Image (cartoon, rainbow, N blue to C red):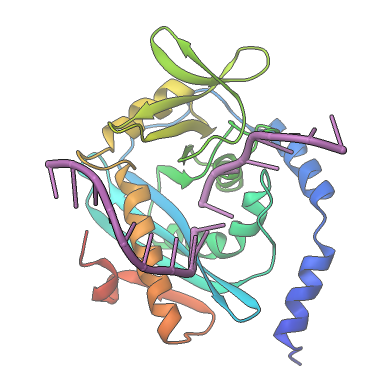
Amino acid sequence: MHENPRLACRDVESRFSPQIAMEAQRLLTSKLVLEDSYGPIRYVAGLDVAYVKRGEETVGAGVAVLLSYPSLEVEDCVAYVARVCIPYIPGLLAFREMNVLAPAVLKLESRNKVDLYVVDGHGIAHPRRFGIASHIGVVMDKPSIGVAKKRLYGREEIWRGSRVLVDEDGRILALILESGRGSKIYVSPGHRITPFSAARLVSSMLRRGHRLPEPTRVADRISKSLRARLKVSDMGIGFIDCLSNRSLYRFF
DNA sequence: GCGACAG
DNA sequence: ATCTTGTCGC
């Protein structure tokens, strides 16, 4: 009935084709809406993943945390832990992280209304205009924004006084926000939003002294708390209700 | 062939 | 992303 999980993962990895994944991204691009297409925003979901190596295997903890907007209070949180088989390949991040992110996102949506996703990674500032934020946005058919700490694609220039990332034709892919000491973040549309609206929304979710917008920052803290827990006890695969585990959320 | 390269 | 010691500064 149940195969050796070690072999199962090796099998997944060997069947994963970067070429086909790239082609999937090119095809999915046709579903992208790069205009503002959303109603009032009341609830924003922040997404992030943390990893822990256990011998040969890598385990991921995908976190989806819901915050009210603009008050930015934590309303709900779901985490999903599972083995991650697909390696990190620049430009194909979504195929690695979606495995643990999708279950968390679906469960969060099953009991909440989500108006916007803020994802750790790029949106259209991507070689094929389909980074993980666009991937999440299109799959869930919801507005989404990518927030990345490092550049992946695009030329940096200044447009009307603002730092931006542009493509080969000079079209704006992302706005670069800086929070003091040279720490910048790249904000790009995922789906159903423009670069400028994305930047305006992210700016409104930045709290003083912090580099990342609240949804991303909280998701990051929770995923890292989970990682610490995974290192000591070996919890199996499955869902974790963050809000019923005080140690995971009491520090925001 | 040589760099660049989200998390 | 994760690993990992000391160190600079508020």
